Image (tube, rainbow, N blue to C red; front, side, top):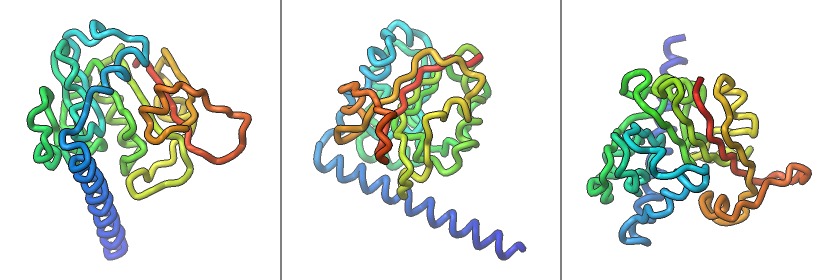
Length: 225
């Protein structure tokens, strides 16, 4: 039994390393293409997209799950604290993230090294389908978010797992993992354009009458009870 468990653990570890190498390779290519990784698009999705203003974030502690190296919280000067969590965070510092006005925390979302009820806002934009253990990640999000805190979510809906997107997310994601949260805003979009952010900006609603298999995008703002 011990040898079987060890083999499974070794296989999962190799998978994780391969996944991270693929993610890092993607960002290195983006860095070469763009020279300086752009982050100007993020503010819209934290504010206008969800009907919020900059004042909403004043003196709040914000966590971005799977933040990437672009500086997703660079815009939020009014916040008390802004933390980007990503297992590749230390590598991102070498890609220029060390210049950003936010804290990068190298950690998996399945084990966030911060206290209970630490954050006022937790967000996951284009990242929660990338995690290795979805139930544990959702449990950790709930643990670090304060009662009355806000969860912001943008995630691809698909049934074609990849090495970087191993989780199959469905439209009833909130009901399954955050059933006690109050949904403040929810939208279903078609993924027509290349990339999530451009598709959401176009705001083409998902046609649930169309049975063709394709990517959608779930957008949710919810409040923790």
